[in-house]
Length: 189
Image 1: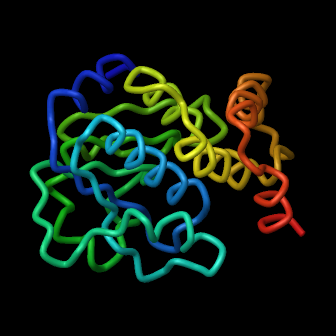
Image 2: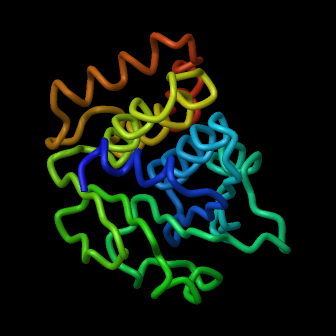
């Protein structure tokens, strides 16, 4: 699927549970949180499956979207997960139930019923940004976790897979007025 088809798929559905990978980093957490915020801005019900591996630096981006224990989703979405082997223990029961998988890894195994992958992206956050643009206007609430996703997965924009498109995505997120300095200080100092 492409970004527009993915956005249409999301707009046609509701009651989402979004999965993040084991040892969650800023990219998986930021992608999941931003997608969840975008879906909620459309009036959709969306939550993140609690992840026991959250750290003190990623937990604040995750916490507002954590699913209550009694939530039963109609649709399961994974963000930044290349293989079901990277599902945390509490997500393993969803291994064959992922309706949509969104990823950027060349090693992505295509385990979703529907899949969108962009291996040329330095971070999955770049792909989520393009999907969210198709769904709803970009807000600081969506932009902040996406900036976390992109900045952390690129090592502060120093990795060799960083492109001009990566920097343009970051600049667009910064233009929303987010406190990108605090993110960079937290994750890189």
